[in-house]
Image (cartoon, rainbow, N blue to C red; front, top):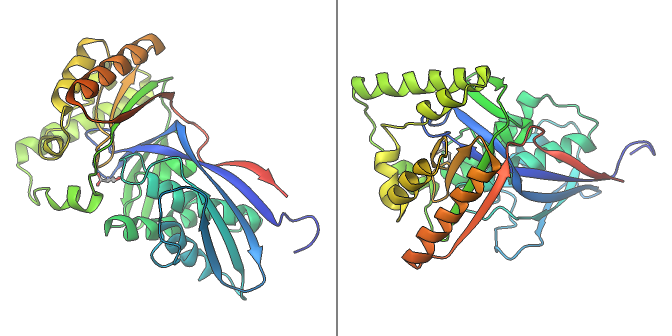
Length: 313
Ligand code: HSE
């Protein structure tokens, strides 16, 4: 590398809430907490080497690792033999429903792209990172990757060919509870019905349109009214003990609305005020303490930046 180009890049990659209740596989939002940290550097070997500094025991074989699969897709489009050393520190627990695999994939390709002087477009990076989602869940979906890379609220209008829309949104406080149970995305997709009743579809697309309009108009009431899912939530919520009671008590406490984060088991609530977000957190703690299920909670805000450079050397 010439002396002006960095040899090592450190980035943060945010957690994300995919689906945003009604928008299965098409809507997503980035959060300011938690975030993964990753560091990438060139190596002279022309290969990809992955290490982890967390205790999650994730695979280091690049083909079995979500960040590895994403980076291998990027490397396949580089001329010559460029090798990378990637070190990942995960703070977003795998299997939480908070876009852990997307943070690894999106963070890795965004960091590599910074090392490479930004030669790839955001569309390319999403395309590469979707290979990581395929390893994680068996399906290429972009509703975690896109907000993770770009920040804010994003709409995936289509993935073939990729057509994404970044949506404006008003300030939002987001409360999340992550009950420490395992729900695998592949299982949570497997149990879904393959066909949808027309009357359910009509409700669902009304809600998606309402939610998008609510974000764009900064209309909190419309956002709240549109956070309804008549297709996916009734099936998946059965996998999450305490879901119905958490949701109904949080709505009573003044949350705008919410539901399953991604494929679960985390549950998120959007709030207009921080004080409501804190009340909602208390309710979530209360429910899971009384159920005797370990949990972790976050009160955070909408992340508008996506993957961020921390350090470049
Ligand atoms: N849209 C995906 C799903 C997100 O709900 O299966 C998985 O994190």
